[in-house]
Length: 371
Image 1 (cartoon, rainbow, N blue to C red):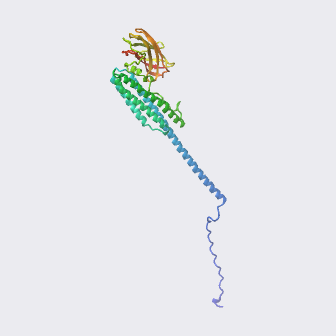
Image 2: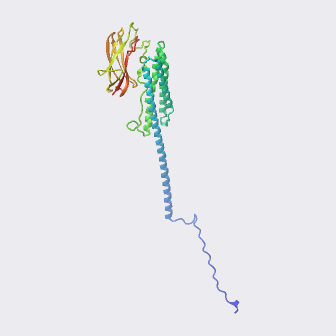
Image 3: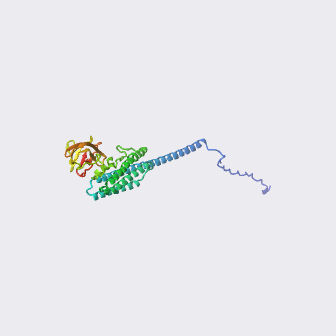
């Protein structure tokens, strides 16, 4: 046997390499149930977290909006209360000037002009208030009220010169009395319409009104007394006499002197001093005793005695049926209500009768502290 005739070694065919399995596709094998439950729990947890976050954000935004709205309502109420207080003080200055006498007409005109200027400033401030939607109606009424006050003061100031002239006095005084109705209307509009709307908006927002820590209101009125709507009261305040028959009696005026003189005023037996501060109890409503004399030459009938607390709307009046020439008498005037505590200017007067020319001694004014 030759070398080449040797039998060949048996060769084993190589094993093919194992094929890699592809990961299962959508149609392949699903994950175990435990994995599916874990995934579902995580998804639900994520949804809950997102929902809670949305709720918290909504609550936070709503809380901020509520806080901002309430702050705006409080700021508006405080601004209105402050402006009305300023307006009422302007009215006090205005009526004090009217009642201060006409010995210096130039000074009177200047005082009234200052009041008109202040009223204009207050009106402009009211127009510029930042107003929440809940009180838009209240704002309109408040601006209208201040407009009435400003217009009334301006129109009255324009009539003062004519009221001091005998030829034009009657028409001017009648016009002044008619203009006083603007002040009365402004008080009604503010107190009965504007303030209730503000209160309603505050309470609807859950804001406490009044009391300790609550929102404070200002309901003071501009017109001190409805007596200012009476032309005779206006004439008396201006210390002028109307030429018409406006007065306490009718018919032709008898010849000769007419009039009265107020000699003294007392409360509870104590005589009031015009030049110093007098102190009397505010409650019950005090009664003033006016001692006066008929200094004319005629018997007068239905003589009015009046006491007015300046700037408060508190007053009182009584009527003496008859006074005799040359004789003294007295009348008692009880105030219509308890005056506010504090120091006020109080005027007692015997209202001028028809034909009375000298009215300088018909009234006395006192500084009184009501305790």
